[in-house]
Image (cartoon, rainbow, N blue to C red; front, side):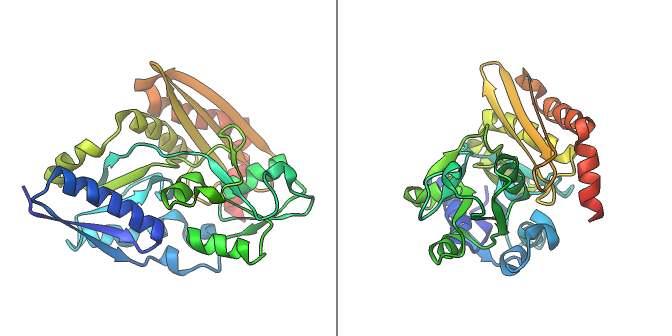
Length: 308
């Protein structure tokens, strides 16, 4: 067994927290193994004056970490699974998906406690077309403004008065000890989460069998079933941050339920469905609900967005 593992990670406080969490678990499981972090700044972290959808999508956070692994400078990378594109390069795989932290979106504001309390014309910050479309479907009178940067940067912009409210992932706030900033939660029915929201993923080279075996103890099979459904949906709709769509799966006994939607960016054309079936069919269920939503009208919406 190897005596050293290098974890590639972004430099943001949240990314470092997640990488250090996995590092600590590895040190606990394998006391003789030296575990180090290799923090890097990705293009997605550096370009903050444009919406992510316009500069290359989620892959901007991932590709440079994959390059480090290919070059042998890192052995693995830890990601927020919701930041990962639907398709991985053929030479990579997910060795583990962790327990799921709170998957909900969180409402944060200095003046208001919930979306319903916001006055007409209120400025709400989010970097996500998924959140934007669902907010506008619910409240077409809101003004949605792009909000980029790490969690601390987004909260600072709110505190400076640039926004009346911001919507962030509850999981990230809780992991950073900032749960007290949450004014209220948007239920998964009100705001369907991004595929993989609240889950950390460990990415390795597909041919690194030893490391995959070492990481197996971190893997949550129940969560993995949910992720299989959500990412199958994402793959079918061409999923990235350029797509106003989301999917959330939950295991209920021997069955799994998948809630999903596709919407126009302004939330006016909004298509939503739910499907359930046996847990072993999770991936097929995710793909099938995507197909149904595309047929409902989602395909036309996404084709229009692709032309813009």
